[in-house]
Amino acid sequence: MKFNVRNIFQRALSNRGKASDESKPVKVPPTFNGNLDLDKKLVLSLAKQRFPTWKQLQYLPEYLTQREKLIVRLLIGATIICLGFLLVRFCQRHVEYLPQQGGSYTEAIVGQPSYVNPVLAQGDVDRDITVLIYSGLFRYDEQLQLVPDLAASYELSEDKKTYTIHLRKGVKWHNGNELLADDILYTIETVQDPDYNSPFYSNFNGVATERIDDHTVTFTLNEPFAPFLSNLTIGILPGHIWSDVAPANFKLAEYNTKPIGSGPYAFKELVKDHSGIIKSYTLERNERYYGQLPYIDTIIMKLYPDFASATEALKSGTVDGMSYVPKEYRETLAEKKGITLYPLQLPQYTAVFFNQKNELLKDQELKKALANAVDRSRILEEALQGQGKVISAPILEGFLGFSSEIGGYAYNPAQAAAELDELEWTIPEGGGLRTKDGAELKFSLTTVDQPEYLKTADILRENWEAIGVGIELKIMNPLRVDKEVIKPRDYEAFLYGEILGSDPDPYPFWHSSQSLDGGLNLSNYYNKDVDKLLEEARKIENADERASKYIDFQKIIADEVPALFLYSPTYDHAIAREIKGVATTRITIPSDRFNGITSWYIKTRLGWD
Image (cartoon, rainbow, N blue to C red; front, side):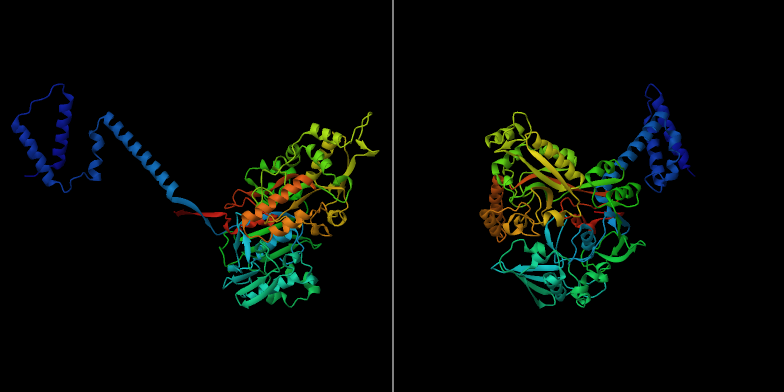
């Protein structure tokens, strides 16, 4: 006898459905229940598997009510949603976009390079290109921490005078030659030779160098100098190329424009116009680089004559970034979609330096009154659009020796006027400038012809004229200010900004020896106690002890007021949003924005954590 399994299955479902439709239960005789059990056993004995096949399940909708079909659809939909949610959560936790090699980054830079040579590089354009091509014994990372670069390790002698540097092994120049200790010695000796006129001469003056072996050199100082390692960030030249170049021809060598280094990027080409003006520099990824290989294949530096044309290039998409965004262009670029402005903290302050050779501006109490009359918050908002910080001392926040307790001078014109009255600088009955012993209270304020400084100077003049002080503004061409104003100290008061560098050492800016021609003591300031504190501090390795010296130094400065500290500006760097991995927040010089260049990337790939 043959049994049709499908008919039996249908009959069982039919009987179930009929029983459910009747309002009263049906009494089934025991014998019938027994038959059902037999049928069930028979069906199970004939079935090849315990669960319905996909073909059998296709008939299921024919036997479901509309309500049951709706419930099934809802359950299936809920299951899909839950699975989708779990998949998304899983991907969020375990799947990520990882950097991938490839792409090109083009940045607009204003100016022209003079020497793409670490021994000669001084301008921003020179350093921007040099830092990508050359590497030093040490470098600054994205957190502005000093870390070994070409150096594998170092030791410092007990007397704190001798540094023994062990070089990485296997480092190659861009031309394939090995970098050795002789290259280190050649670079430092070139800097030390006055015939080469290196701007870094003073950093290594009196430092003795010695080659121990191919991968070991020593630097011996005349006396301890805590910040010395920061000097070793200077790029190293390939001695096997440069040693045949005489000092007289050093600045004329082709390698100053077509350099060979050991950094993350190698020179590929430069483009000039018919008049010899360099239009662009193209650098390519150095496949021999000893450190983390860069993700971006090509870096192109496009050179522009001014910020207006550089800004237009960024807005039009001709370039992917802009080295520096002046305050007057910041709002325009901030509104442009696809561009991110990075406000980098720069160790720079702008101040009014009172020339201590001027008898009038030697008066401490007079300068305190002038300080109380200045609205520095207004200067910050109007001259910098709020992009910076008001300051009151020469050591900035985040650097060794900073103290929020160093006294500043709050804006209080009424108090300033009262202080001038006490000093017997009085306003005549008919009005006008304050006078004393027949002399008017007035002096000149010299500054540079740049929007930020011009606006600041206007506010200073307005503030001081409001308390009866006469101000004559003298505006100088930026190209002539160094030769005609700074070196001869030809000013009474000078509104200017100074970049302090990576180490907080105030010695170059406030020690009396730096008042001489070419020094950075712009106030011509002399105080024997300050000189002693600065001399002692730079010999101390212990950070707390050194900071204590700097705090004492700042207290004297706050009391004697050789300068009126105004603000510390930020350095705005613009980059297209498609450029990722940019993490630098603090810099010491503009080229430090490339400290993390090997981590920048454009292309990505999916990966698992």
